Structure formats: structure tokens, C-alpha cells
Image 1: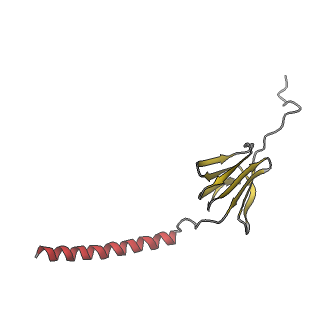
Image 2: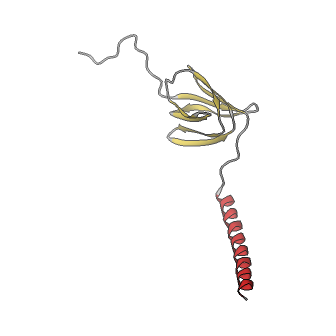
Image 3: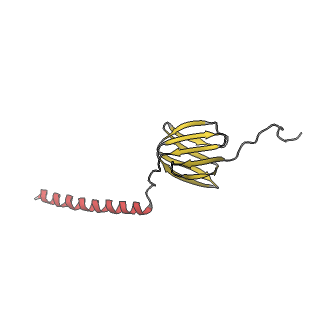
Length: 131
């Protein structure tokens, strides 16, 4: 017996055509292995062959895998449309990127400075109360 597929069998796609856009520009357009999208009622994963749907996109992070690399994009609210040709995400705006290392270092420096200032005041205040 042959292991050949039936003549009328349709091959499942191996990727999803993903388009992420704002009213001003296309942010990403390409084939992805999967995409994870924040909706108001939780995250949804879109894989090749996913059923069509339309949903409200919540503020959060869109994650997707392309060419073996996982990418992330912080987005505001918008609309998700999954259709036979792929997946389209229309967002009103991008969200500020996560803190960079420079921003983290500046934050830690500010916190340390504030802590030293408050320790000095607390020590002076304690010394004044002991008298």
C-alpha cells in the first residue's frame, strides 16, 4: 500500500502571513510560524490554518516567530482580523518600548540617590529624637 495522500487532499500552510499596521505605516509584513496577540479577554495564539475571526485588540505585546527569531512589538488597542490569506493587526499607536538598559541604569541611580538622601534625613531625625 502506498502512503500517498488522497488526490483531493489540501496541504495545510506552514506559515501565517502577518501584517501589523497603523493608519500611517506598515510596521511588519511577512510570513511567521505563529503570532500571540493580546485581546481584551486574554491572549490568543494564531497558527497556520487558524479559523477566521475578528476581535478587539487590547494594549499589550504582540509576539511572533519569523525565521527562527521571536520578536515583540508593544501595541495599543486595535483590531485583529484572521482570514484565509493571513492575519492583519491594525493598531492605533505603538506603546513606548520596554525600558532599555540605559533607562534601567538611570532609574537605579535615581533610586539609590533617593535612598541615600532619605537615610541621611532619617539618621539626622533619629539622632535629634534621642537627645
